[in-house]
Image 1 (cartoon, rainbow, N blue to C red):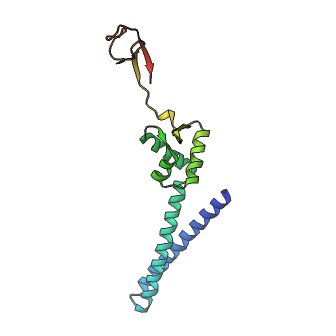
Image 2: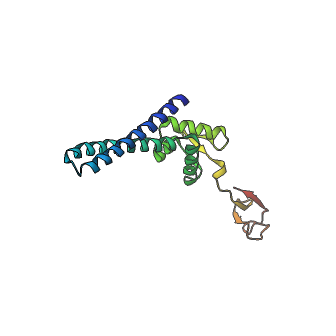
Image 3: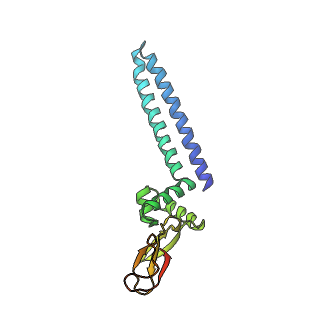
Length: 169
């Protein structure tokens, strides 16, 4: 897979440089078309082909960069931060517009690094990112279950008189 990726990147880079050469030739022929208008169609063809090749190679290079392992992992983590630290594979694929196999590989890497884990709910696999979940400290009554802010200096429940415990949610 690494050889295929390197070959693809080399081919993309070569096509980009060929496109730049065509663009350069097109500009030269465009300048020469001032003296001889017969060169104008060739200049136009070189500019269109060169622009197309350079644009396509640039788009492909950018896409490959977005699918690079470290970049994709960071993009998935940022997406999880927006979705309350829980994602499904379908959300990753649709939101980031990445291939299914690239998303699976990135989620497996994140899971191996301990940055997320799988939960199975209602027949679906959900990836939970515990490092992104907000935790809240509250006072909870051990008897009735009412919750109170830790900012209030309470030790007994105002509702039932039970002891309040400090818990992290």
